[in-house]
Length: 176
Length: 184
Image (tube, rainbow over the protein chains, first blue to last red):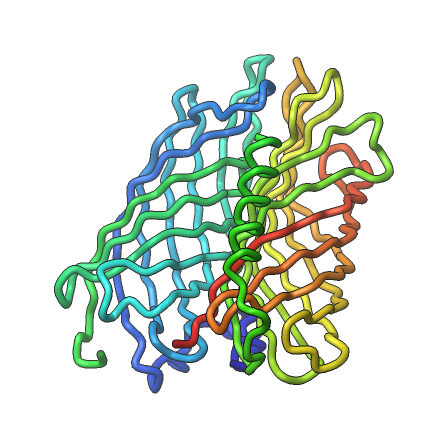
């Protein structure tokens, strides 16, 4: 379990195939998501919808069930907002190899390019670093189809609550 | 939002406490903990509203004096008159010291690093946004409810400068939640 202590270092050194001897599951997935931003009355306003694509290395069943995800998001807001994001996540998961669904969580860092309308008619534009996180359920249908449902937050370019569903394919099925 | 976070966190903790057999084995382990989170601006209490939300973290509790966690939380500023509202989204890593070998209640002290995205919202004005780094000092108790479940209550002081406004974020962060270990 002390291998978890190495997570920050792994974040920097990144998914070099330290994964190679861990029996990790490589997965590619596409996502659909909706973002909502806090309003001034304690509620959440719909910001817009988007799509994403990601590559994951999951490690279910190990005593240090850490995986990684490299993801992109393309979000179009209802009032002209635009958000393009590249994120790197640490994934932690309970063992889902014999389950249809298992809890998971993801935390990570982002780089976002965004354009947000201001009240004076101008736009706030720029590239900014940030964070994201979320919890959800995921699993395999059969041996190759991966699915995930997740709620979380996105704080890069804009701060928002995110609901996301993903569908993917597991490569290299010989491992587990 | 405030009431929802409070009531659901309290319910989770009460359920966890009610289900707790006396004390659990304290083998080295890690758990994914979901927790209600509140942030109160200590230095600017009269000008900035409290923020409420949720977080999750992986807590490692080995059988030696070192504990660590990583995770994140999102808290949203709640309307409170004309006060400024702060939404804080974080990625957090901390490392700490847990004295003694008590198997049921493990108090700990920790320090850590925060990567923060902060949105400052004042009613009727454009929001100010940005990324910053922060530091926190944290104390808390981890309670092993059973071999698979644990509860955690923590309080930390977060020090950071608010991007866009230059204000002192200086927030007291209170968190309480339960989690399940990864081992079978």
